[in-house]
Image 1 (cartoon, one colour):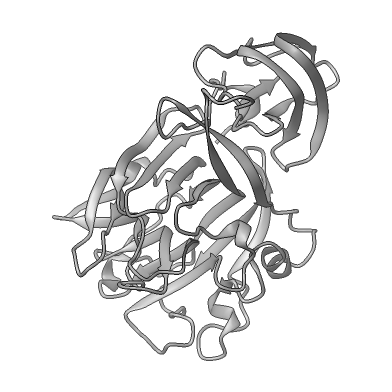
Image 2 (tube, one colour):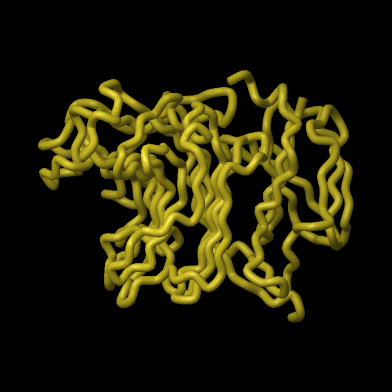
Length: 372
């Protein structure tokens, strides 16, 4: 892929997601896991510093599995910068130290020893955001190949993922899909799917998942390319995202696939890239209440995009707060204080060429722009 920063007029993305028209979502906590590159601190130590000691299920961590080969490393490129690379090997990797020969996994997760800010309790709304890339030609099992899961801890059917982003082969047709399971012994339901080739290009994708973990919950998942074109998108209200008797719901990222159809899988090492994990806890505020905060969505814009010098931002109402500008390695590069204004102009000539992200204090706002 050519250097994205210089060839794409990236469209404005509003990540604010309202559960109902009268509500707005306000960020109350945020945890980010960002790679610091191949020359940074120990990769496994970096991951555990955010998700907790023991959050990694990589084959090299088990003497009976595939020791001696690091299965999660760090790299860097011109599209998303520093990122994690997950490796999988058909003939060498297994499932932790379980001794199972019908599956293999290389995953990271949040779990009981993780901070409360990275797991979802009943009634809570969380937003998950990350970048994802499969090696071009990545092979998938005829049975299942999962790359993201929501899993319950405790309660009924906790072994069955609630939601997964997967690749599978259905009626001899390879597909990229989002799957849901309501528990109680029910079968998986394919919420949406597309051809596997859509995901299997070797290009980065951007993924956002917003979930209210409740019996009568809410789910929105959007998978887009870096041009802003949607590849898969689903939104469900009144969906059961809680397991009876459960303690919390946790996310898992990585490669977890079946070995029951090995002939479908490549003999070579295969990789998946992950970058810029973000977990936000959100509170719902009634817009009609005194002091409530309005989500920045329709009626706001950023122009021009890409920008050479002056960037204009117009919001749907007046705001007071701080606009913070980050590069894709989560480094704060600029901050703009605004007071009771709905429009600003900003001279970007001091910025290096690249892709940048603007956030506002206490708002579910994520504006993107390219600097030439």
